[in-house]
Length: 430
Image (tube, rainbow, N blue to C red):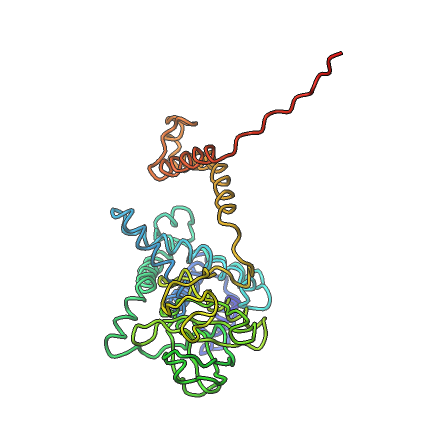
């Protein structure tokens, strides 16, 4: 990209000239203005292609990232209604500073190329990364004051800011667009969803009536999990027999061994087409595969608002559950679900009381640091003239946090057992 030398450009431009004129053109020394204009044209062309690729990448953004950006966009807009650009900058600060700009500047670290570029290429990539970051900050005038080389690029940066705003608007509003498309003529053709995990699983026959049980009871079925749904078919590549949207999955948990005589069975609790809760029991070939499926299902369903807090680790046979012997088929489960347990930390959650105590001590230690950081973020004159220390005023959010910590500290002291009496030495009287 940036290896296209000035010499090759001059050859291309002068290929229709006589040999004498062509040679004189090759050896003519370029003026500073010509060099700047040539560099501007190349950099503006690269920047346009780069921003165009970014704008087109909105549908490829993972649903979890889109949901996080959507929440951030909405909350900042509600908190700072007088600054409409703040909600855009809140999103681009993460995207450009942590993803786009580093990937442009050092593509090898992001597996975009096998080796680092030479000095000329690295310089071009550095300028592009800076330009992308300035577009993400959405303040080209501020960038011009800091970087003199940006002056010729101001029109391109201004256009890039408009493109970036359109990109963020689409990114945080894709959920609404998808709902409208589903209500209208249907979803348009686009890139296929990324496969998270797939493979054959044995479906145990039960008394359920869901689409999965009706289409694939008592036989092996090929399952495919993506960032949108859990689908199944008779074999890989065959037409799908059914699909369960991720929003309808309520839990993915292990099944106790005595239920089916195997310790490699999991259950997927979901909402069927009629709005009824259904459970599919799927057997894996080994414990490793079981853990992989559970981890994958829990990760893609992490933002599902309808997840269950409790489930039955057994099955409903006859007129009762095999795990707790309850006779209510749709009653509350007897064991808690483990949505946060994945392969990165494959263990049951620790004692909630111990974790709460650890978090409390951590926040107590951060109390002074938070106060100091708040004053550092203020304008220098306010930070110097205003009172500091324990008596310094703090914003409402920090004040509420400190108040809650104070209440917790009071409850902690009341709950502590009394200290044992100090042992004393017995004096023997003679």
